[in-house]
Image (cartoon, rainbow, N blue to C red):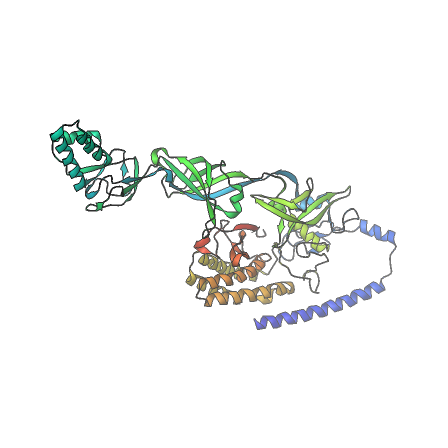
Length: 595
């Protein structure tokens, strides 16, 4: 690392010397060249030969067609970058030809009701309203169980067990003696019958006792409901009291669909909302239902609330515990008329959200960067709280091509909020202004691609280890990252990439060292915050992957300060909480590799 820093310091001194020498030569030439008449200058402007540039590397500008020296792609005609006095000084001018080459597409900002596509995960659960307890109506000892395992199906009136009850034997003897002494119609006999009925003996059972003229020693326990046994709470030989629970039985003719709703989606879920859902165990079958209840509190551990759908279950094909994925189109509770734009129109820098607004004149089209305040996330769209007006046109495709043109013209851009020309090391040997990372890939030598890919694999393994709560695997991945970081040929980087990349490399190395030595997974997750920030900065400008990466965010990380991470998968798997809050987070940006 010290060798790299000495190399970087030498490159900076060399660049400073070349910059001063270039400035002196330019100054001498400007003093030596005679001034031209304004008319001649206008003719030169109108007859100026077209410039050629690379669609992937707009800093490349040549006077003739050819190949890009960085990536080898064919150069294309460069768009005009002056505003012609017809638009704001901060606007970028483009001709229709340039727009066609860049494949610019726009969208007219409109007002509409807020709708959001929702995708919710959950599971089939027992309908708690259909759960019944099978009690013991008489005290005694369990002599025999006819229903003796969980999950067994029973029907109402079925014999479930037999109980030996000395108290019931005494009550039978009282009845028989009363009948013998005073007859069956006597008050004493009627009182004995009522005592037996209080223990849930039927008139048919009482008549059988009178007809037999003898005491019955064991009595059956009859099922009071139809369904499946959820819990068996007694065994043969157990003594039970009157009213004690023997079994829990659930009628599964209806079930609940319980869906996990994260905090950010709670404003969209309300009773009466229609959902369609499918069960992984029953492919090809689609079910529909209506939300009838939403939990009033959020679980402090999982950070989710539950939405409930009551579903008819003929044939019992939906079984409690089956996994469910539900989808629906939700409207906001307040249903306001709000400004809506596609997400592809928004360039997200972490702190600022930017769009390019298009305006027209007779000669050309102009694009001006504007900062906006985002509201709710609506699937493929955003709500705009401020910064735009209805009817304005924003760019939804080729936004980064326009931003690159703005950088070259010295206009405000993602990388340079105030404007001013940002020279590239390919264009001038002087330095550049700030090296803030953007979401466009920076061309780098081919020697860097394999080491960067290895670092991404290490990062992905580290992230997955934290997701799965495996500190030993995380330490191994962090050590692999340190080993591969040493193999990155920093000396092949151009000066601008040195100034941008070296601080990030040091941050990655320090954080990976902490993780490799840490014994506590919480310490690893704190260090992973720093490592992720640095690696995201790399990924935003360097081709670290040949596939799409997703920038994801959890607002609960770092003591509610929030934390970002990169993932190859769009589905959220939170490395800052692991199994505790696995699904907490959302996708904030998609990083697509240059083709």
